[in-house]
Length: 544
Image (tube, rainbow, N blue to C red; front, top):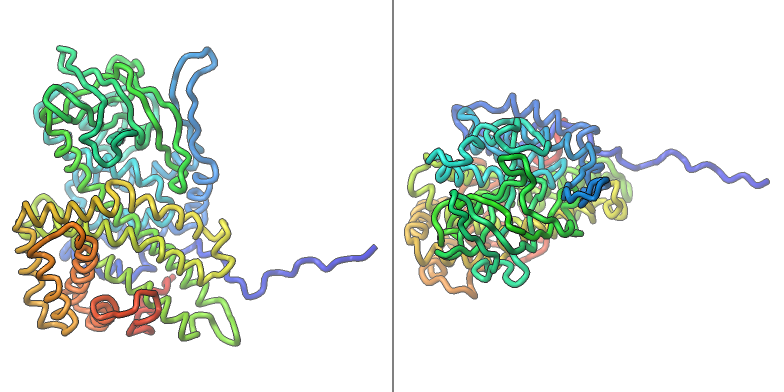
């Protein structure tokens, strides 16, 4: 019998990058944290978190939660409708971690926390599993909305406040006040309207006892296992916002009928559903006819988290590509030593330098106690950052895949899952055109946003010639906003904002590379036009 040689041990194949400290490996993130949180040292807590998330066990939980996605159980053994969503234990362990990190309530629940430190934690968790970020970002956005209405008035669900602000995860089926922790989802879009929520036909009628009966449907019902959802429905006064609990105060299941779970491209560990409301009961949040405004307040937070999540995913993709290039030998030398490859990797690293610095600055400006001009800058830059960063994400991950070649195209590398995750952040909470129109709305109706931008950019024009030219070009676009120019404006605005933060934070070489590569560039592909290649690679390579 012919004997075939056994497959040899792998040669020239880097080991999986699954045992390193996610926080310590990210020098630009640590520098941005220090710049935006002076006097507040969160580094020890974040170092411990980075070590915990950067273990083989943590990464395997993320993979397992995606391999074994949620399952809808409509009926129990006796034929009773239960509409329960079952998850793999990996999902619950990940959810325990993200709630312990207070991603769902942040400084709302812990006055010693900061929006900047939460932004860092959000980006770290995104590198392990992004689906768990959906329930926590919606809860984080819902808390100030609820605090400002029902809870401030000691309304009928004021006793939800304690479990909402808890760091505990409790997936049990029970009325919210009886739980150790609760999470909030949202349901806005319907089949006939999508982003045009004014076209919603779901109806709400008062019951006479402080609640409303909701009848209709939602085409996308995010995280159906949540304890309650903020939904939009048409009341007598117009489009209004309601809080619908999954379990009613008496312990009965609310009239929320799950039709099916969506079969999504990515975000597969998390559940999204189609739903019908059959006399579902809910509380009015705010005033009748003001539902769109209420949901937009929540959406401001979730849109910002979309940009954070995309940046975290990009960071993991870059780490995988850099680690592979550092250990893989091709044509007689390490892959990273080939000039073309080094330029591509450095250009990817440059994106993360700018986005990380800007997002942590925005996190600081988005605090309730921020100065008026800072809040104005956050108002205009949040949708612009959501637009550009989430748009760039998919192409960024494709470049990272190319570094690994065929290895980057197989599931074991994690890059296919990261790639599938990317589009949801560009679509959810408003696609690119919706973000562009929001920018135009802010410029037209809130002129202080334009003034704040121009006042921020003006003195920096003396810091770099490319910045001076770019800020001159953007001036007319800001002065006369037109819808067909808004995408171009958003990109220019964020590239200038990233340059401004980098210039202010003091790393002159990185700032010069950004101004040259993003403000003064003529090429659109990664690796075609980048300076400070060696510096960027040294700053970006995982350090562990």
